[in-house]
Image 1: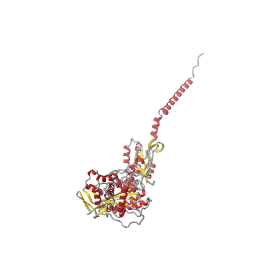
Image 2: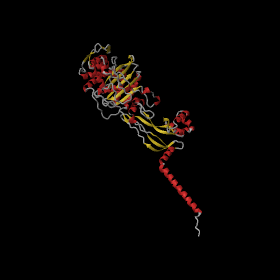
Image 3: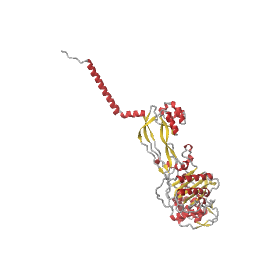
Image 4: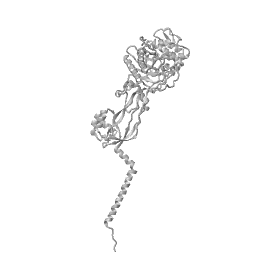
Length: 569
């Protein structure tokens, strides 16, 4: 019997089955390789073809006044960006896109060519909403919109110098914006977006890293007082044809800056008009000799020495004195007057004789303790320390001229801080641009007795002396005028001045300190009592009422204003 041979079809079946099984094994192995071993690589490649990582911005912190009113806010705005390689390959859209972005097709092509290897390039930052809508409707390949934020300042030029501004990347460049940039600045995140067939981002897939918004900053500024100071300073600079001006208002006990303004001003919202010189914050960067506004500190030194009292007599006859070959003059021969009257009459001769009776190091030490020759600590960019020479180099004429404000240079903010020490009973306040919820520690620089005595002298200087225009109805005011010849390369100018007024109110319980400096008044009178004192009076009249500070001398407004005299230097 012969053995049956396998049917040829069965053999083929087994071969086919073997091939199928082998194919399935290979497919399974390939699937395992793709899904497990090469999963990360393939995911990366797929994402590169269909998704893109872009910046996810957040808003900068608001700057608020002491009552919580916004002074600087960040508003959402779109910027136009592109994937350079994709847009370069679609030149048909260049002409329409260039028109929308206010450029030329050639400029657009050059920008894309320079950045061909990059994944992201800005075409135009912070475009108006209408332009953003038209760019989106154009559907140019590789072109997308990115949400960013643009800084807006509701008060415009009123707060320009004190707040400063940010650049297009929302980074602080001047003023509070720069001083507290680390606090205010947002930390951007990243997000993955889905691309369409044209390479345009069309949908957010996920947040890779969440953005962190900036923190709000509550400042010491009072927007109402800031506006008053801005309005009155601007009016005075225009009225007197002055070169520039600065004004500062401080809280006498906390050192909080309630207002800080400069002229000429600038509007931080109008970036297209920016020029470097516009940002000069004169209240903290410009140095001036303070003139007669320094005399109260010379007298305070004399009272602290024990050699003088307010009633001590000083012989100012014949209205001149010769020191080191230089003649010191008063406007009139005041004869024999008390120390208190030296301040009231603003006698250069009387102040000089008092200074020569003191140890020069004691006088220097007083100036140093009230903050002259050192920055105030306001944190404002560009703040200068001023000029206060060592007493080792002083000769008698230096000692005399410095006693009435020549040979020493200060900023308006420094002078305001020094006057706060006279106002609050002899303590030096730390200047701050942040709202304080409690009074800070204050080192003592004068005894309360001396501070009170000088305060009374400064009240007389307003009521009966050169500062009559600084009076405020229903309030007692203390202060001092100053008129300084400006120093040039060839000596002191005969017709170029700085007009000062420094003071505080109400005298019974001083709350507000203000310093006004007008640089180069050229129209009308140029004395501190005529130019700077009225600014103080107008601002203080409004500020005391706005802040609900109780009157300390109810009476009709004064009708007799005493003009500044040429002897008030």
